[in-house]
Amino acid sequence: MNYLRGDIVLFPYPFTDLQAKKVRPAVIVSLPGGKYEDVFIVPLTSRIHNLSDGEFLLGKWKAAGLNVPTAVKRGCVLVDTALILTKIGNVQSEELFNIEKSLKKWLYLI
View 1 (spheres, rainbow, N blue to C red):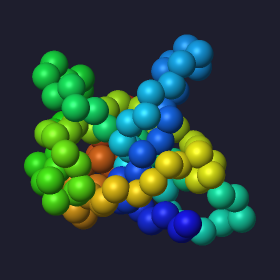
View 2: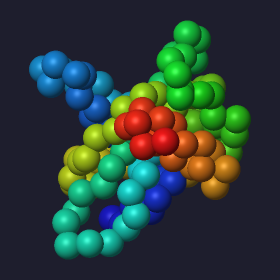
View 3: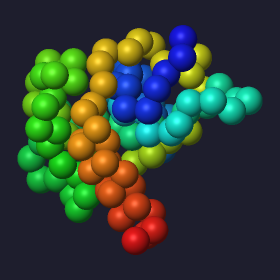
């Protein structure tokens, strides 16, 4: 399956110790194409309280295909698309723009 920038997918996201995983939604932030079947994803979470700097609640989470209020979580992982379980929706362009701003902040690119 081809995935596009802004798609929300379910993925077995690894914990930082790389010993355990949890299936959670994530947003694809890379552009499609290239010779590799890898995409960059940013995790999402239903834990919407006590968000860290750059994390934020998606305003249109229902329209994005999510069942509960959901926030963008700090992080970015390069994954093979074969590991993606399914696509459940996509984020609006303004929310994708906010994810890009957060990524730049987290990576000290601004």
